[in-house]
Image (cartoon, rainbow, N blue to C red; front, side, top):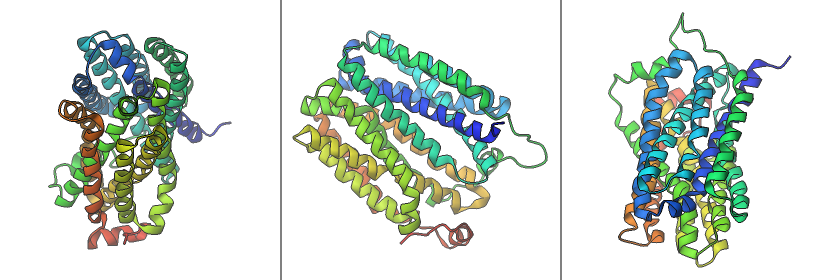
Length: 401
């Protein structure tokens, strides 16, 4: 008989991969959708804010629903909604229709994001050891698969609507196969559940150091958002690459992020989290600079790859530092860093769009380059204080150089 916990973990892998694949297919088709809607980069930038607004709203709605009804029910419903919504941008004609489509897609993505992470926490609790990073690596794998498949369908001149409709059908199939293996809600009686910690801890005054970590998360996740939504357009506009070739820009970035996420734990254990953020952010700045200024497509793809490798290990170190700063208030601290970081990811694409009114797209990329430089210089904030040292020591966490 199959181990229920192992089956639940595999089902969670499936939903993380599906989420990355759905978003990846949307990202790679942005140039075609933009052309079909007849809008400029600047208008697209503003419309992408609706995608973020929808995601934020979905997160706020689905959180209480997952607590009340359990992730076992909410994850499949969210996956169906997200899968169905991805076809809408491919059908949109004009900015109003595209804005509405992005709002719905964002809402579905926000619901799936929170609900599948809630279930991932439940699975991790069952294993009694860290397994969360692997889930997020599979999210990146989904993005890589999307880039490779979309590069092929674009070369065949498939329309965005047809391709994204196929993605919707695939999402329904994956959901039907994976949903039965999800875990049932955990009993809440007899003790404080981990989900209750953030709400209780939120009444405390958040330390200044936590807000500093959150500010770094905002800047670095803003950079990730820029890569997600503008890497493909950058290759097309700056170097006049074909649609199928331009799709490889996001694929290179997503592949590098995946590899980096799989290797970062070993690097941090050897050199410390401060070094990971300091050198990773500096490497990211170098990579994006190369992508922005590259005169050849291969060099630009190398730049996006280096950018992804540099960014990949930074955010987990910020989350870890926040969680270990105060074990009595770890949930609230992590929620501050994660929440502000996600707002940065949402804002990044929207910030670049309006900038293209005043400067070329490759010059606009130097805003995230500057944020990476700031993060590299401020990486010392990762280093824990005396109390955090005492709490982290039994866990074997390195304080960093």
